[in-house]
Image (cartoon, rainbow, N blue to C red):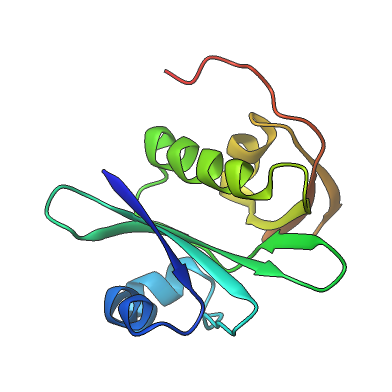
Length: 139
């Protein structure tokens, strides 16, 4: 698996994620909520050995040194893919940005396992803040 970090409106990003963000099954997984991007986004895209996208985490960065993961996709919520993506995001943020995430409820435990805490919950989503990186086993 490789991870590419792409600017929010790059041609490479569009070519990689367009087939997914327009796929009915992917949209259904996202509760029919559309995906979006902007110049303020940085996308972390996980590719398998066949160069197929298996997950992506858009990171939106605002002018107040805040970064937020939102509107992401994981094909099967495999832990190794999640940990690889989140480690890349941690390395990028590296104390320069406070980090939060809007998480699908079925992925809440994964985010908790790396140091996120829920600050607000709805029926389908949880808003989470990154508190500290846990050193839990990732195998």
